[in-house]
Amino acid sequence: MKKKIISTLCISAFLVTGSVHAATFTKSLKGLDINVKAPTVSVPAKTTTKTSVNKAAMKANISSINSKVNSVSSNYQSAVNNLANNLLPKEQLKKYNEEKEKIKSQATSNASVNIEIAENGTVSLNKYIKSSSAKDTFKNLTTAQKTAIKKDLKNLQNVSASYSQIAEQSKTLAKQIKADPGAALELKTDLTDMVKNEVKVTKQVKNIAKLSKSITTSAAKAGVSL
Image (cartoon, rainbow, N blue to C red; front, top):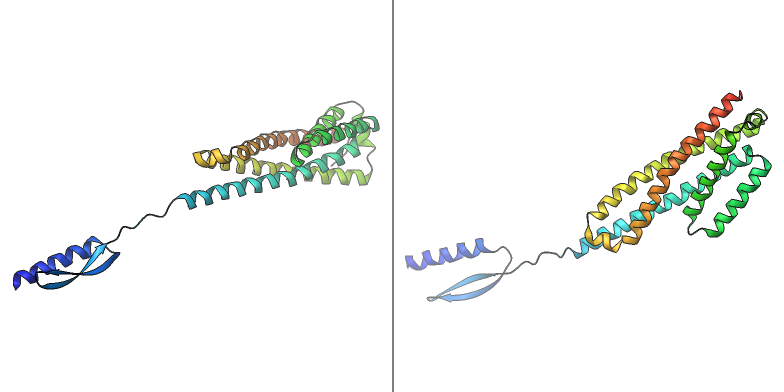
C-alpha cells in the first residue's frame, strides 16, 4: 500500500511541475484511478502582427513629416515672396515672378515647388541686396513696408527652426527604418523621398540664415532699423 501511495505522489508531482496548461484525463495504474494532466504545447504569438504595426507606424511618421514639410515650405515661400515684393525693383521682381511660374509648371510636389520658389527668391534677394542701389531701397521704405519686412524675417526664423526640427526627426526615423531590413525594403520609396526632403530643408536653413543676415546688415548700413 505504501509503495502505491509513494508512486502516486511521485507521478503527481512530476505532472504538476511539468506543465501549467494541461488537459486532464483519468489513467488506471495498478488498480488506482489517477487524474493525469497531459501537457499542452503553448505556441508563441507570431511576430508578424508586431512587425506590421511597426511598419504602419513608420509609414505614418513619414507621412507626418511630409505634411510638416509641406506646411512649413508654404510659409517659407510666402515670406520670401513678401520680401521680394517689398525689396526687389520692378524689373527684378517681374523676372522673379516669371521664374516662379516656370517652377510651378515643372513641379512634382507642393513641398518641392514651394522650396524651389523660395530658394530662387533668396538668391535673387541676396544678389540685389549686395548691389549699390539696395541702400536707397532701404532708405525709401515706408513704415508699413518696414513692419512687413520685420514680420517676414520673424516668419523666416520660425521656418528655420521648424526645418531644423524636421531634419532631426527625419534622421532619427531613417535610422529606425534602416535597422529593420523588412521595413527598409517595404518603405524604400518613402524613405528615399524623406531623405531627399531632409537634405533640402537642411540646405534651406543655411539659405534663410544668409538671407536674414544680408537684409538686416544692409538695412543697418542704410541707417534703417528692422
